[in-house]
Length: 319
Image 1: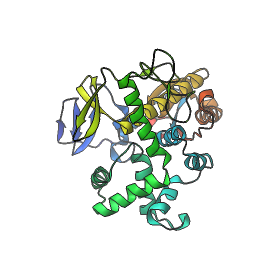
Image 2 (image 1 turned 45 degrees about the horizontal axis):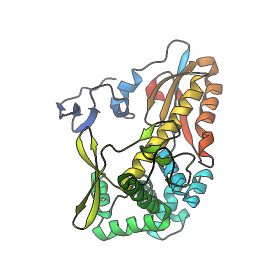
Image 3 (image 1 turned 60 degrees about the vertical axis):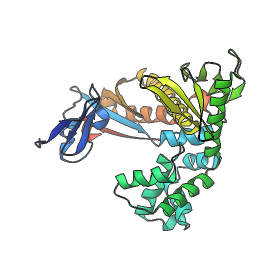
């Protein structure tokens, strides 16, 4: 069933199309991320069909950024919780509300989820409160600060990684990283990510660098900026951690795609989800193979627990 959509507006500058107050497209090409997954507008995804005799398998990595972040930081208790398939959102909520995990309510778990997925890159109490307001959740400034403190105290290795990110920026700016010799480490797994003169070397072979890095004094604090397509852009420890974490996660997805594509056709990726088209007769075995590939960490990421969820359908929207 197709439902008419009214009040479509192009809010620019990158073609941010809004329909009835909801963002439906925000790029100059097709953005599958913004196709509605549920409700009456799911007709868009349901319009994408597998060829005759085939089905679509969509497999989504579970909390891959939060897992990579914990692993990079050496936050071993969180890494182990992921490995044990524990409910890390309830665990966080239990720290926030100071009550046993088994007593955590649905709304309290939502808060734990929001914190685990949203506060890993240095988000402060003020911005955290604003982000919750965007989700129609109102809390006091004091409660916001208490929640941020609970996260940082519970997983103290993660704020240490932010500070290490700042130290790496300083090393790059001061020229303390010489040539191709690794002199400064990043995170607890330098076989995965290492800092050289030209930036952070990723396991894929790509280099994450900050062009024309500059340091300035602002109200007694040191601030770094680099040259980007948008001009001079601020960079700081938490943002470095975000950049590296997302880049490492992408390296993992790329390796998984390469492994899966040796047996089945990969037709689409949306962030940390891989979509394949497989013969209908092989659907069950293909699903098991794809899930196995997406749960197995690369050789350079030993000890990183990965998880995934998948679905099968004749239509993309059914997955």
